[in-house]
Length: 415
Image (tube, rainbow, N blue to C red; front, side, top):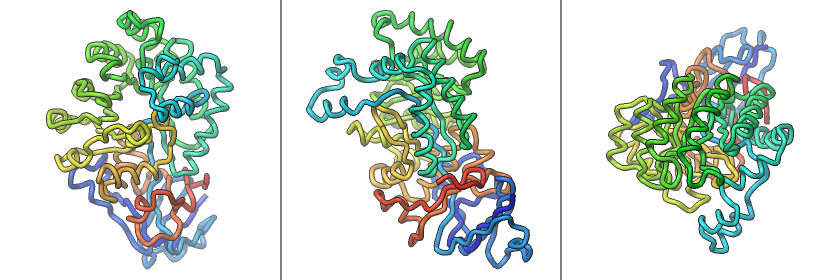
């Protein structure tokens, strides 16, 4: 099937150089063509350029022609950090927070990650899949064409496998790219409260081998932070994961200067995520690495916590990716357009930096920048078509407006 998009007001994020990511000042680079065309063949970008250079027989050969006057086109979002497979919801906890209860008080009432673990334990795999499907459909309609989904609400072997099998079913049944991450080290189960090292042993000796044997995950993650898993715990878990071919992705420095960033870089983590507590020492470590710093401003908004110092990171020469952290406790939204607006408003990132952070750099944070993230010949036709807007700057600026006209995944409309 050949699809022709013509009279595109502006075709953004063009890359003929096969870049893996953009860092520092280069995050301001967004190549574009005004009054453009784009050709899609069998779900892949085959050609693009100025309308004046449109091949004379292109419309005749096309199976479908779409006239996009006054509409922009740019790559679909790649959301590299979510927990969107979960059971139930936790809005009552948030109401308790509004009423003044502390995190510790909410936890004593059975709230937090352990609440999600209890709900998931009492939910069948089929029901868990059924609850997850609307979230997948929602993020696709909002422009996400690739998503990483973590386990971590099981906290025992059987329930972690249940989550990972649901993630596999999503990959098999939906057109978007799905990457799976094993996060058994999300929290310490109540029954291991004073025996954390034994739970780490269970992750290493029982969970990781079966996850690997069933090929249920590409990546392994640890919540390496104050009050969760130490650098020593993280060392042990990542070493075990690497033996089974699971590359690290780390929850790091959300709550304190935990050493999580340094540990992630030590193990060549594909990304270190959260990063609210990041200073000069962490930045210097990241400069000499292939690890993508990934910021999750939705969690900072929802929990009223400090925001990661994105401006300092970029000005220091680092790349930055943005992700939603879609989960029931700290960021109950997978709307990446909202994440872009938070980056503008709260992280003081510029529109060009934001576009790189939610497309190319977030693709790198998922290990897929070779197939998506830019407008490039041979890459997947995962695209956002905007409604008529005055310029791209308007897209993150109008934080409450639905400005997406259509979303294409593999060249096919999903909105």
